[in-house]
Length: 263
Image 1 (cartoon, one colour):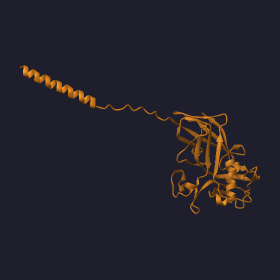
Image 2: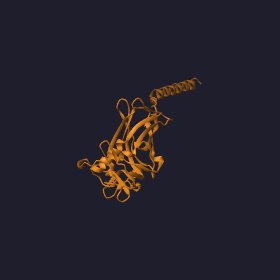
Image 3: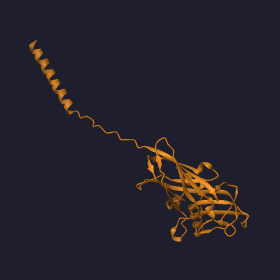
């Protein structure tokens, strides 16, 4: 019996040593700190169109700077490469930032932009037109789909601004301005880069909020500004890149102004 007891004690002692050894050999998993989830939100870019400081509408007669009656039947243009600017000068750029404004489709004049990092922003910049890289990238989709009627198949490039309508001052009763071109070497780069500071205002991007940047678009600027004017009687059609297209596109862009922010 004593022998059996000694054997049992020896076995128990050996098992205890084995268990203790196993416990020492075990390596506990390191504690990985939880990374905070980046907060994002969205905002809307509202484009309010006017003509001579009055509300702009299609199929409505207006008087341009040259004193001619003009009635728009179409107004399309690209807003692209949208960036938000912080007070320290750093920027957030919207990925795949191409938006086609078709005035006849009211929903396109209120551009929604999502997945914006939560922060306070003091300015915005964007382009009227399509950057040179995408101009030469072949068939594309979405806002850049050629089916939108804003692509010159013969010229392998996008129309940045398309304005069409009627006018009794025109020799054929119509006007048609298709403005584009991105090659600086021949002075026909119609791309317009715009930047606006919010002044004393700022825009706060937070989850579950939708602030709105309100912009004014003076469509009458197409027909002139302090630098000169465009007469339908003398030029009722521009359908290719060149200095005329660049000048009209520049005037149109100069008619776009920051108005206020709804936070």
